[in-house]
Length: 228
Image (tube, rainbow, N blue to C red; front, top):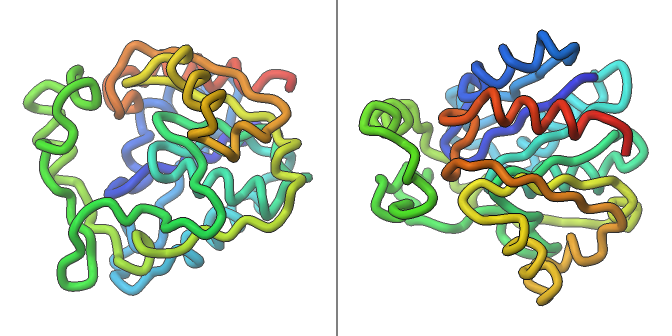
């Protein structure tokens, strides 16, 4: 199966290298995406540009791909479900949840000179980064690509209720599956509260399991690629 891998803020496709290497022997074709504005040198990219890039990858897949979103890019994976509900096998959300219609994509940190740079590790102290050693922190920070304002401040638009028919797997790194279920039941994640098929998978990691637990994450994705 084609597995489209979409990294969160500040990440390009290279962050999936170890996961991709672990997926290939399992019989899958991993497709790490480098999004407009996050690795192609563009600072004028918009959220619409990133959505278009994801949809182009979906359309290029020979079958029905598994679309994997990490962190903020969970919203991109869910937008793929909204735009191509009949084309997706499943959506996998790692360390994040879908953004609702009419909400900003990722307006989380200060924008300067038209981009949102990586804010340093202080906002991520605690469970998010507990399993990152000093080397991993330095490498992630050095590779972080400032996100164009047109992406971070872009508004999510969801229009097709068939997205709720697409099976979802929530991968839970810095939080547990039990916590995720509680948040959904409490109404904190309205998009997933309406989804018809939601499964959960715990992974013992911080917010970046593709860096710290790539083999474990690959096994979870392999399982998710099975029957709905």
